[in-house]
Structure formats: structure tokens, C-alpha cells
Picture 1 (cartoon, one colour):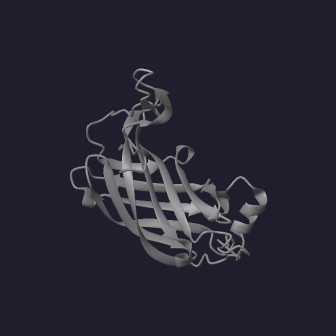
Picture 2 (cartoon, one colour; picture 1 turned 180 degrees about the vertical axis):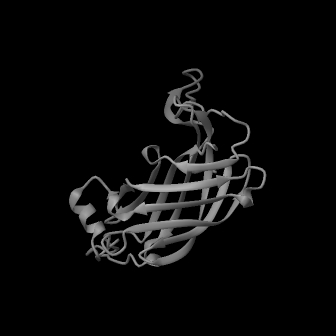
Picture 3 (tube, helix red, strand yellow; picture 1 turned 90 degrees about the vertical axis):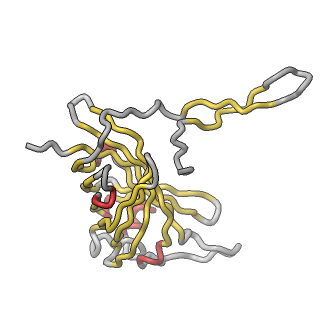
Length: 220
């Protein structure tokens, strides 16, 4: 998919290769994470999101020069996965807007205010899928309605399966990573400030980031 490089390799450093006379240089690579596991061949089933191990985050440009990142601490959601018929799959997520956190209290307070999310008036962000497609063995595209401040617009997110596992408590877990870019103004998040040097204080384009751990619902 390109976003997450699931071949588990990334550039670590450059090292000398070959003889000193040749002066050739090669790139050394090492795994980013341990290789994913596969506890089951078929992940079809119903799942609930594990908020303790799921991150729904975002990143934005500040003052046109640096990236600020944040996330929402309180969320819940569910999904139905149908590996044989991906179109029969579905997902829904609810996020508490007041749980937004960027690691800086003043900024978080501003984001909760009427300039941005207005959390007292609009306490939740909601996503409900409208279609699911499978591109290949690991990549799924989830399209759905994203509602922020009572404004609903469609978004599409490419997710990459990161494997399945049995945790120490016997739960079957599946993992997905995904990202997409949206324009915050489409949902009425329009506050900004012009810079003397040109540009604006907060970028209009926002990258949404998803690291999902979901637990299979045990029937009976």
C-alpha cells in the first residue's frame, strides 16, 4: 500500500559495501517490527474495537513548518468482517470529541472550544461504513459517512491487515492500519489565522490515522 511498508523493512543506515577501492555504498535495512502472526486462516466474524489498543489519531501542519499530532482517547466501535464476501462487511465507530489530546493543555482546550469541535454542543464524532471492498490479500478499502458537528460527508480509507493472534486471555484479535487525508473545512472546522509571511497557522488538510485492534465476539 505504500503507507505502512508491511514488508517490515525500513532504511536503518548507510554502510560501506564492497572494497575501499570501489567506494561503493549500500543501504542496510532492518525490520521495523516483529513479523505479524496469523492465528486463523479465516478472520470472518463479528468484532469489537479494543479502545486500550486502538489509536484514532490525526496530524496537521502548524505555521506551515511543523507537524502536530494528536488522538482521541475515548472511542467505541464494532465491525463485521466477511473474508469471502467483503461487500458484506461493515464497521461503525463513535468517538468522544472531548477526549482529544495533543499533549498540550492550551491547544487541547482550543480544539474543544467553539472555534473547532465545540464539544459541549457536539459531543461525538461518528463513522458508519457504506461499502467495503478488498483490493488484495491484505488491503481493504472502507468507505463510509463521517459525521463531525452534524455535518456528514463520505470518506474512503485504505486499511492494511497486520495479522491475527490469540492473546493471553484466549481472545482472537485482528489488526488493521490505515490512513486518509481530509479537508477539515468540509466539516465546518474553519478557524484559522493568517501568517505575516504568507500561509495560515493551521493546515486545512488533515491526515487521519488508524491503528486498530479488534477482538472477536464469542458467540454463546
